[in-house]
Image (cartoon, rainbow, N blue to C red; front, side, top):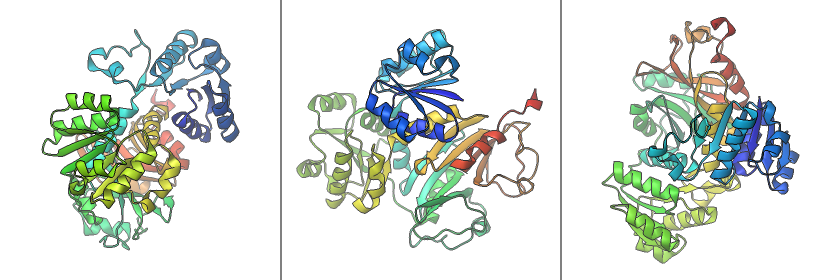
Length: 458
């Protein structure tokens, strides 16, 4: 597949890295020569220095042969115009744009991004996607990652196995025997820094990170089984009143009105604007690095601090200081992936990488076959995928024990007519079932083949 990426920043680089590794023909456009030089020297991609919305630049990048354009520059207007030009002059079939300004995405302007108006097939809003991720983490304390699939009926949770975890040193096949009514399947394990897709004979060990796919109604029981019985936060302090912080605060006010919420915002004008829009949230003007400000926010009594500023250092140091002052837990937004390896030693309980969230949102539209949703984990080492089974799929009609799945793939759940099914050897997948599975990066192409329309279908 021929793909053009406009923007060679962190998100653009991450998408180019993933797509080039999978053998796609990738061209990257950016007006900064230093970024193009860096990306072409480290990745198997071609680069063009120039303005991503200019026709001659798109032509030089091979737009006349492109199957897809992904516009992820820092500017919404450039992203939109690049997609428009790609459509009008080069007839590029699929157009994806990152849109950060919420005014473009307001419900009353829902017709803006349509073939008749602005021909963009998919809009990605990083602030909204990250905000939703933060809310999911708050809803399930104890999980280090939470993603929902199949109309929110299936949940993937990443859970660290604590020393007192009752399921360690037990073969996975015995877990279903010990807990027959628990609708949950361990699909991926990170042990000693290495990720692998387990078989039924593998075991979990203390300190391992388990990726578990389960029925939404069984998440809290699953967390408890792994030694996590943390209570949902009743007192929350948010550091940063930007788009993400405001989105999270507004959602908490709407859906968890009993939660006591405070925001610390360093920009006075923004603090006033946010305070005017929120009903029951206390907004304080100051720095999350100011100990007096944290104490003014009653951080010593808080259950959770959520650091959502644009500055990684403020997020990390402010969250560490908050815990030293008595806050029970912290959740930190980290843009620079180089910081992620130090989070545990620094005292960070959980973190979110907005680049990873954005890339996952884009990948589902890049994948071939009936792929409905994709979420990348462990810096792209694996993906959790939701796909719809077709009549021609190799998975349909036979018991799973008779199907030789490619290595590196483990089915976590099947969603059928409103019911979540925990798969076992006797399970038969039917056409139109939605399958949630865990796949190592090298096995993703096999997943695409399993869920593609066969030529015989026509």
